[in-house]
Length: 226
Image 1 (cartoon, helix red, strand yellow):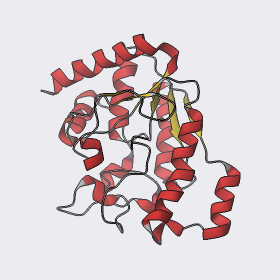
Image 2 (cartoon, one colour):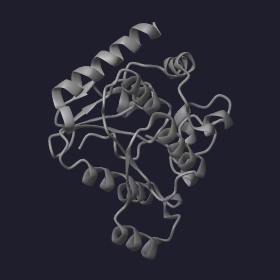
Image 3 (spheres, rainbow, N blue to C red):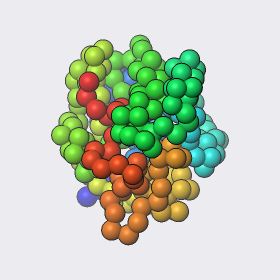
Image 4 (cartoon, rainbow, N blue to C red):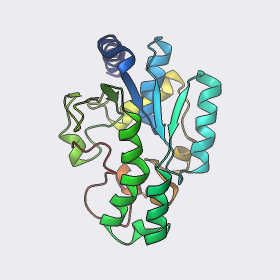
């Protein structure tokens, strides 16, 4: 089964690269799913640039991993940051950890540190690739492989791993010897900002390690249709 999905992934990456050319970009947090996509593109000489958001609150292990990716794959990654004035205003008004106080505060933090930088960095691109899977959240379950007019700018969002399972992802990683963030070996199942992610406990779903103090949908806003 994984061989068939690998072939489909490679074909899709070629197709969208042919369709959009240099107007296509991969948005990556360098999680396991993102690395599957980047690896599949790299071994098949499908050149797709990568954008990643440095929120200012990433794990040190994530920073080290990004450095390692560059040395192994030779990938040039564009790292984008929050607007300094917008972030300074948030910190002045609400402090560094306001996201623990309410869902609204947490969404505001994600908006400033992730969503706004992504939107600005996508200027000039017509399509972007995400590593989401349908079985991760209710919102993602309702996504499509190709999502036209995903945002207010009319960009297309492409979800190559939408039908993959967590087992598929790790089978691919093991079979192809794909490097991954060492935090996965410490019990993390989903990796975001350091204050907002923790290892999952036995019986928990992989998204339970994100914003574990909240109930409801576990999304930062990037993968929510505008």
